[in-house]
Length: 243
Image 1 (spheres, helix red, strand yellow):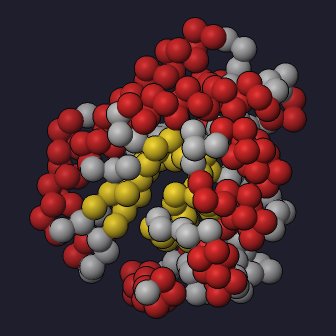
Image 2 (tube, helix red, strand yellow; image 1 turned 90 degrees about the horizontal axis):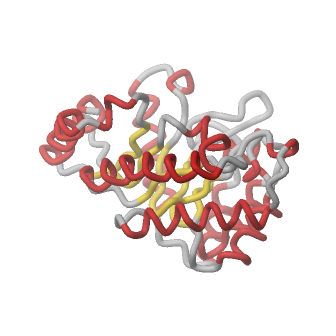
């Protein structure tokens, strides 16, 4: 992180990779780096994202309760860093699940409320191979829960799922609170913003229509850029896009 703050990045999403990174000493070190550079954390991403099907969306009630307690550790970590959002993946392999949509919505609502009590928004992300990959599901979730839900829009995840990213963004509507920016073309679904064919002008127009006021985070993988200069070029592209 210090390397990124040294070249001018100021807003971050933290992807926790292990339980030890939720320790106070680790978090305090991160906070020190952030504070010394005038930087901030907007959102956090649990290392248990891949287990959320089992933790929250199975038919084992006591595991749900225990998992809710465990996620309070993430809420506490987010609060310590000054973050506002926890990114939720939700249920994978949903085609084989006996859990109804309404049951999913109700489980999520309990998570959302637990986060709210800690000052954190639990935001459902659209994720390939997860229940949230379908814009129709996202739209029904928003209609069912109203203000008791919020969303993270990730362009590459919509593309990977074979869905129209603009349809996904529209489904989230005015409950969209956070955006993962990336780009794509016919060969790759995860490029730095500005390196592909994404119609960002259309996206920005759509966001204006429902008054989006959240932030934009460049989210790609390390292999998506050859060097730091390439990342800096993309940051400039995004700054021009959102100014």
